[in-house]
Length: 268
Image (cartoon, rainbow, N blue to C red; front, side, top):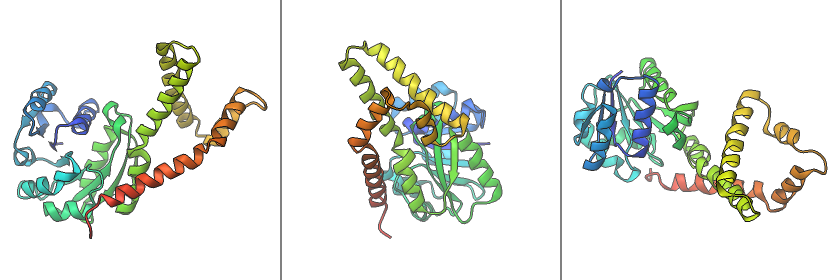
């Protein structure tokens, strides 16, 4: 599969790493367009073709991945409109840009809007995607293959509102998790634990808890109850978190992110 990546920033390179790791495409089949010269030099280390011309990266591509900042999506889409092949599928990972806007600015109906997240950089991301009305079965298969290289969980949604909600949940979600990790570490250090020890224990706990939840398939409440003995240390800790309004805080946070994601979209 021939892939053109427009934008060689963090997420563009994260997808590139995932594509190469999963052998979705070989380096010879990938072209990356990046306007920053220093980044172009860094990207050549992957063995792919690197250019400063977005149109050049699109020519002959089966999949064109748009990995640029939301505020330049319209400009970039218009610049590559004539270079995207009729059989190619255009995939945008720009937050807050509606599928209809991607189609309108690029003139390409076979487009897909995707919301990935930061762990895509290590092939453990999550992704939600919205298919354009002209995407064929073959093009969808390419999208599934592309996302499979960077995400452990891939979900298809039905409209842009659902993508915005996914943005608030898993797109912003790593920041929520990192805040919890940071808070746990800082608390342990305040109480006397060495920071490297606290970091090692907390990171292993978070990673292991997520892995166990995935492999066991049990409801999170059942897993929480399994760790919570009546009158024990975990019960005491959870009592404090509940009293502090942790659930309500997460509810408010995700709703705020959802609202902001919708605000970022172009007026209809």
